[in-house]
Image: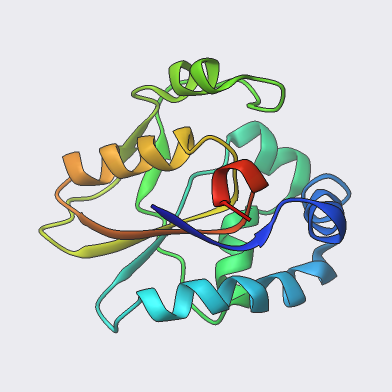
Length: 160
């Protein structure tokens, strides 16, 4: 189960879109504070806080990784322990089945987990395909996924 700080609708969705699409990084402060409300209870001193990886294309376009930025603004340290190993298409506009297929075997752990506890962090959860793939890759790499959190989730997914 994914815990989300906000429903992805209204003001929250507009702010997240501005952060992701328009470079308005000042919004990362209040959005990171919202993320902290669901992230902080899940982490212990030895827990790895692992953002879902950002595609190279998105990083080049923005100049920053949204999940990493949000984690830092939530007063935690992102551990980049996942990488994308296949090209994926932008998930916007894809249905649940297409998202799952798009993400299948797309990630791998960048280092051995050796049983370490891990919390996966994403900015927006729609169907859960990205977090499912992140959990699969981390567990295959020897991590123990103890939680998954997101800044926002679509109302259907989060039960808002």
